[in-house]
Image 1 (spheres, helix red, strand yellow):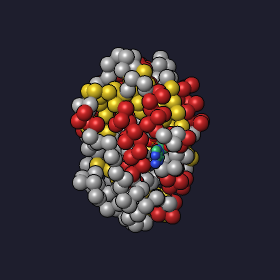
Image 2 (cartoon, rainbow, N blue to C red):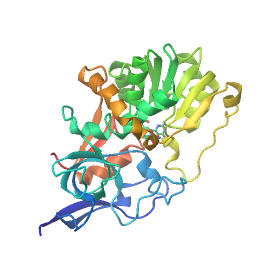
Image 3 (cartoon, rainbow, N blue to C red):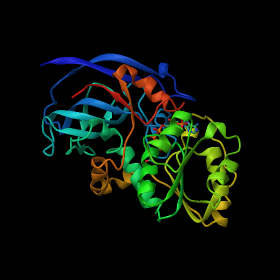
Image 4 (spheres, rainbow, N blue to C red):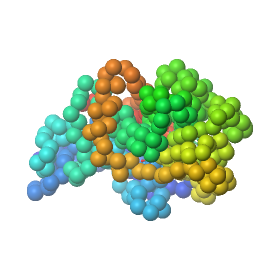
Length: 341
Ligand SMILES: NC(=O)c1ccc[n+]([C@@H]2O[C@H](COP(=O)([O-])OP(=O)(O)OC[C@H]3O[C@@H](n4cnc5c(N)ncnc54)[C@H](OP(=O)(O)O)[C@@H]3O)[C@@H](O)[C@H]2O)c1
């Protein structure tokens, strides 16, 4: 039976504080490219891996009340695009392309449940780690299902140029909204305005008074805040929300590396302004995936929605790419190429 090298990214131990490349090891193990007898799993060749901010949360012993955790000594788990080498499940066959939760290694044995079969291949396959995968669904569900946008409303998006944010801004424009985004560099601010169609954008690192910045861009207040970062940004937003505003709470990346979370002081504005603020996890919306594909696929084909990726070549460059999310090194969706199809 053929044994081949299986390069892996192993989490050494649970992480405290800001993650470092040295928290992960690149190791060469081996794998037999054959499904164990009676297995109903899939044997996958991983092609693209997705760097997602929540992966840092899983590097801490589970304190989230259910999101789970990576296992020290084992490969990281995360979203990816893979090719089926062998299938023990009737719905999949050799050669199928799938996206879903896999492991940070060259080849993986994965339960078939929860994998999505890729039917359209007229777009880059890596898009299934981003616009056509989990982040795309997140932007869609968070903005349309929780944000409930109406034409002419005012929308603010933080971490606006990233995997999720770049789409929220474009969806907001398609819905006829005025949309402003914040990001951490001039290059990203330029992208927001010149590529993703944001009406306005600013570099939050250059604004020492975020409340004043928001008042400048939203003199009449914010109807929808798509929350990606938390902390000071959320506090300033609360002061600028309109009555009956909505805050889909997608993420709070500023908090993921802190041992002591920061406080938010303006929560009473939720009452004064009757704001609907709701956290969500995208997996609860996967039943909408087909509807989402029907919505977004023609928009991609017609060039009405664009998507920017930041590609790191090689599994060995995965740890640096992942860590880059927490200092803003990525410009657009951070993808790691394990193998080209
Ligand atoms: N609820 C869900 O199901 C779900 C699903 C997917 C993603 N999310 C969340 O959505 C958010 C965006 O995810 P993404 O995949 O689109 O990531 P991303 O925006 O592609 O990458 C993360 C970006 O966050 C910004 N950032 C990092 N540290 C920050 C800090 N301390 N303060 C402010 N900004 C900071 C950086 O951009 P700058 O250069 O602009 O600072 C960085 O590039 C994250 O909070 C993530 O956890 C939630």
